[in-house]
Image (cartoon, rainbow, N blue to C red; front, side):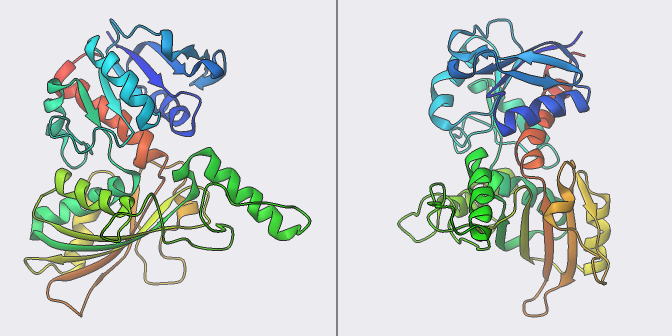
Length: 340
């Protein structure tokens, strides 16, 4: 016996990835519904070797459905997620709407799988921000060994984090650079993204950090440990898919780089590729389409006591969004629902 699954926002980049990953991982599905806004009604999407036609989210009845994977913005989620949850369908939400709600668990299955059991307060589970998801996968096994005091992270985030519009803007601007007769105005980003980097993701807050940076702080504390101090600088780079992060970690106890490397090699969801030679590390283009969070450049930080540096790369549409949501559904099935 399998599950009745609804994918909400099935025509978007993350929604399509959710359908792909459900099929790839052979999630036990008895029935699946691809939902989208009325303007996308009837659009065809793929689920394994099947083709699904999208249904109207506004008219859909979630009664009798087990799990709904939401991949729509916070405004629409605010309308439809409570309806689905009230009908008895468990919502796994990829937006930021519920991440900081104390009654909603924020889950990365490799890190805090037990947290899914707190879903019942609102019938909702939140998926973390893409930049946080890959980082905490790397932090947790090291924290278990030596207790992390402080993290300094600089991100290099791809334009797919802004959705299809971000991808289109990078593509159009790149073409315009080589064809100056093309008149192109930046719409998604405040400055040119092609052949540039922009130290600005999401809105600015009063203290000078951006909301993306604040998310990494708040979510790491909620998922891993509220005692960990985190400071982040989040940067948009001209890469289509794949987020990278340079992470500096200060521990309470000494942790040798060789032991850190061994710990990460054995940790769930992580692939260590760390050769001290030309090309002996992973870059964003190499992680696209993969499930793993890749770790490279593991080394001691000699400027502080008990410090380690590392490089972390992951497909943000997968581990940063769709894959993590499907893994939450799998964890929910194993620990709570126990079907399939």
